[in-house]
Image (cartoon, rainbow, N blue to C red; front, side, top):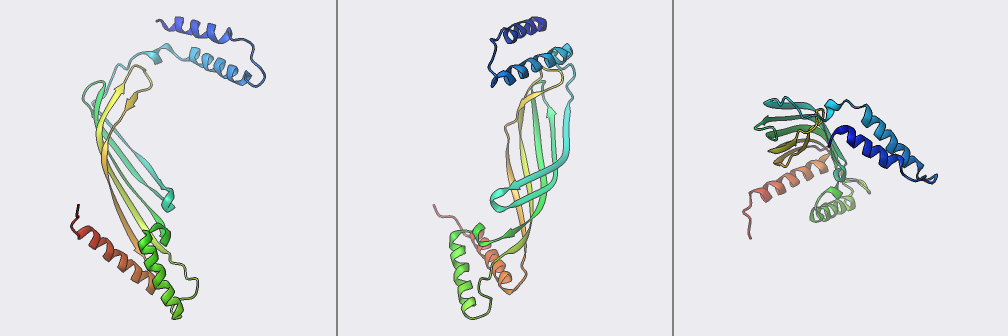
Amino acid sequence: MALQELYKITAAILFSLPRLGRGRSTMKFLLRVALTLLWTMPSVSFAQQDYVGRFDIYNGFAYFDSPSAHLTERGYHLQAGVNATRWLSLGFDFSDVSGNVTLVPSLLKSSLVNQIGGQLASLESAGVVPLGYQVAVGTASTTQTYAGGPQLEFRHFKAVTLFVHPSIGAIHETATPHPHDFFTTGLVQQLATTVRSTIGSPSTE
């Protein structure tokens, strides 16, 4: 169907709509504005893309948000790919971001929370730590992501490329705690020992 014929049909549909009530007049106005913008777009925008480069590369700012841990990280993102055909490309993504988070017992497993609570109760009763002592450990976090996969592209439009990009990848997380007193120092050492023994122990199924 020619583009001008599409315009005429769309215009006929829009401007033959019955008069709308006050509550729906905004929708009709927006539809007419959209049609006006469509008319003003050059017809070349609807032509297929004539040139497709062999390689694509993007790099820029990255922002990660982990609401459950109250952690935000900022850093660098790289995406590179090669166009095997006009409709298929293969790509790789890499991100490196960092931020700071305060580790509190609520972020740990319930078994560790109970263990920490028992230790604190003993220390409080002995007068080693003040009553109501709150455990909090400042921690620097670094996250790296790696992903790769194909990208299916639809190049029917001149100025816009629609695509689907399934991928598979991995995440590498590094956390560096900064304890500030004897209790948090001992707690960090205890947690590090627990993590090492968990990773090093053989799995049983």
